[in-house]
Image 1: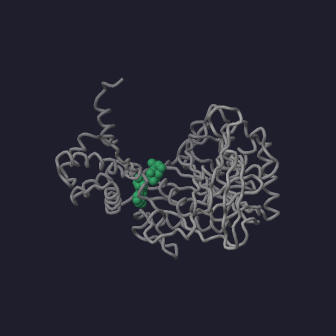
Image 2: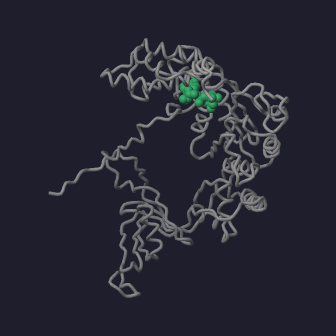
Image 3: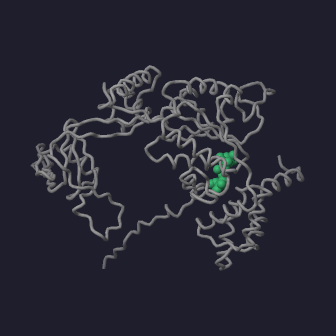
Amino acid sequence: MVQITEVKDTQSREARTAAHTHIKGLGLDEKGVAKKIEGGFVGQNDAREACGIIVDLIKSKKMSGRAILLAGPPGTGKTALALAISQELGPKVPFCPIVGSELYSAEVKKTAALMENFRRAIGLRIKETKEVYEGEVIELTPEESENPLGGYGKTISHVIVGLKTAKGTKNLRLDPSIYESIQKERVTIGDVIYIEANTGSVKRVGRSDAYATEFDLEAEEYVPLPKGEVHKKKEIVQDVTLHDLDVANARPQGGQDVLSMMGQLLKPKKTEITDKLRSEVNKVVSKYIDQGVAELIPGVLFIDEVNMLDIEIFTYLNKALESLMAPIVVLASNRGLTTIRGTDDDIKAPHGCPPDLIDRLLIVRTLAYNQEEIKIIIGKRAGLEGLNVSNEALDKLSLHGINNSLRYALQLLSPAGILAKTANRQEITVDDIEECEILFLDSKRSIKVLEESSGYI
Ligand SMILES: Nc1ncnc2c1ncn2[C@@H]1O[C@H](COP(=O)(O)OP(=O)(O)OP(=O)(O)O)[C@@H](O)[C@H]1O
Ligand SMILES: [Mg+2]
């Protein structure tokens, strides 16, 4: 007999945990005051509240072309804070995270790379009124015909789509190419869709709520049966970034207006994006903003490890911040007084940033944690990784957090979990932690070993 087994789709993807998986937001109350433990965050209250104010400013669109620096010792949650800011802003506000070193590439000039990321962080919400056919799908029949080139195959000559609204129904006879996009959107009978009359592009709005059942647990969006006629004018809102528009227009056959730019967003880029092209795009965008068709949504460009930037990039950054279309730039650094990259060795500057940039920054400080806070953070991570840790073991780990680093303490968790499992225990004990200490060195001990032994090359 043929055996058939079901493939479970509960892949390990959800179970995997990354460094910041536990961070879910800034964890502030309605007044913007940090709750002691919330949103995955523990302590660091002042920095969280400061970030909350920044989020408010960005949301109110009062702030653009400003820069914020998150400064503090390693492992104090700077990257986590930036991530939380993006979560608070939601998916509609662009958030572009990079690391300082990403700007150095052999192919693109570093200033061009910075400009590209600037434009990834600026959103444009375009409202267009389009002629569409919208309704609940009541019929979807592809009609086949003999293959005109002969042979046995059949081809789809056209497809009949029946659409229903509260006012009536309409049957449309569509081109096979539209059938492809219908399949791509996985449209089935009972879905509400609209088809753009000009381009023929199909968009699935959701499932008609006539099909909603009480037991349906799936994350399906139910929408009411559209009102009005099937054939009508509809306001369509699209969120893109300036970089998307650059890419769409860098293609050889790029169109003249935003409409045709849209249609090309997902195709691979071919031609270089030049400054000239960017200013062309800017012109079109400004026109659309003036006409009230589009709205600019400045997002966030997050540059981690800002001390990796060099003096040339810094001067360019100053200039870019002053341009009309600039996002909020959030920088992070764990350095104190450091040489600025690309300058003579003896010039030291705070955080490795030139003083004229520092002068433009709002600086948010992150502070080292106390043992109690570290203990709670480790406890949270353990919960996330599905590990039970005894109280004494938690104490021991948090001591490591104080004496070595929070990261080292967090790193020890998973190996200790494996040791406990091998010993057939449900709980991580002090013994497991001690064994891990022997197996894995922390940075201080590692340096000590190196100092004591001169055997290394
Ligand atoms: N207040 C906090 N609450 C919960 N988890 C935290 C907190 N601060 C840091 N963490 C976690 O500790 C780890 C280290 O923090 P993070 O990577 O944000 O440090 P950082 O300040 O960016 O350090 P570096 O300067 O080395 O880049 C991460 O896993 C982070 O999610
Ligand atoms: Mg970091």
